[in-house]
Length: 480
Image (cartoon, rainbow, N blue to C red; front, side, top):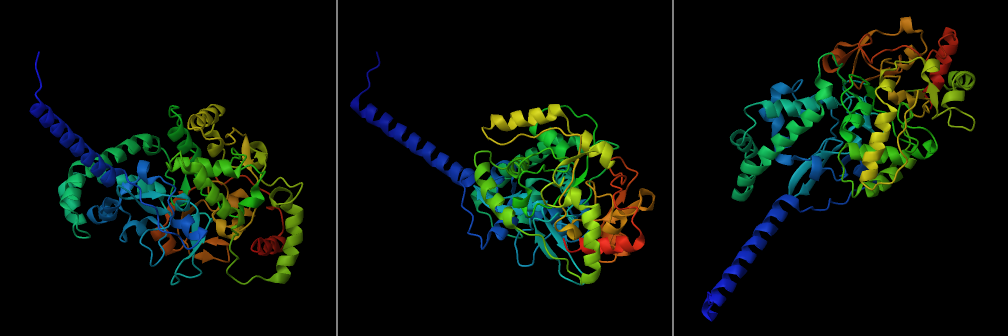
């Protein structure tokens, strides 16, 4: 039997203590460099927090900040034009480090993720030379989210997405310590590439041949939900839909939400949206609370051009007779209720992307996260949306297939067949954004209503009014 002398015992204890200390130091260093979370600085208002505040998606879906910074400089050919991320239509306020809807938070190291504002802050200009006015809780109709996702995947498929190239560019902007350089070279850059490739596989369905592009201000919301929250196989459906406005949320309590009315609770919409952006399930209820508080009282912006009050007064009577029964936030109205597809007659592709099986699978997935919320359902139509802030919500119908309000009162054969969306200069004559000028065509996305999911048929209410009645009604709709 081996006998351990007192001297040897002391040496072994010392060696053990050193090993434990080294392991502790390595563990602490790893935690500090890769996992520690620093609190965000305080925001001046809930509105600022809505535009830039974290929903704690950085740890699971964040892109390392310095990689995010240099990608447009290393790979400009994968963007639609000069200007970096701005060329994707992403709103960026002067004087702010990050674009609206993009968060920056330290989780070990600075990381970039998204929040609700990436889809729900709109912009408009009354003329080309004007600085945009940004409208929180409005529909973002300029950002091309799909093209942003495709930009990231194009970058990681390029041979230049490597430590030598990226670190050389990063060093043009900041000085990394020797430890951080090693971390980026052997861990951060390879893991970022792996994570983006994994997301590419999750989004492979949107890149299949024959699938229409979303374009600015749209996504395919129910397919995104279906393929991110469930393991259901791809079914070939398409359902591109506009980002909706989400202001005045308190008035929407008790209404069906989402274009198809699948979600019967504002609280559920916020929770599911945060989860879709890969927010932390453990804190999603805390995020929902402050977002809900902000959106409850946030009001839509006023129409920025003069309104003929006398003409609008005549239009109000027409609105009450022709529109209020479905769209007014009032007792007895169908606002927020699902109108059967046979009655509304609009493009049904968005409706058909969602099934009862998908709803059950999504509800089961949320329940496994121990999150209590009213579940998603399957419907057979589209909801009659309240019209608050209607002027700012162009283009119209759930898929953004009608460019302006004037054409919404025209029969289908007179509605525009091809237009360009994503330009934020407003056209007060048509009551919508400019979709046909040379500049609109230069920066915009071509919408062809013959493509699957882009149909502009249906919603024929008001199309039989005479010209004077339509003019009066349109004047009133500016006031909502």
